[in-house]
Amino acid sequence: MGIVYAELKQFDKAKTEYLTILKEKTNPHFLETVKEYGEKYGLT
Image 1 (tube, helix red, strand yellow):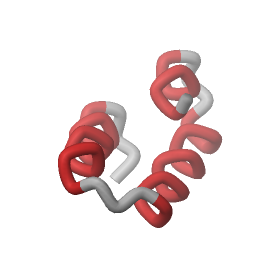
Image 2 (cartoon, rainbow, N blue to C red):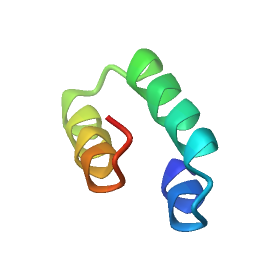
Image 3 (tube, rainbow, N blue to C red):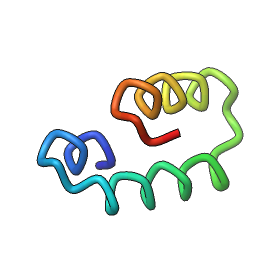
Image 4 (cartoon, rainbow, N blue to C red):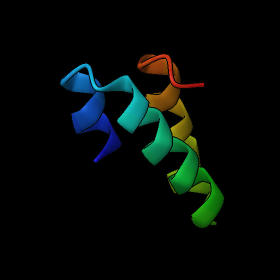
């Protein structure tokens, strides 16, 4: 969902979603993908 927020230029919501996912998910491959999108959309 964070990607959708970022595409809609709702960066506050996107960043909140990004940080929540990083805290909750433990699959390293998924986290790497999330981090890549975070960098792409300037959420890091």
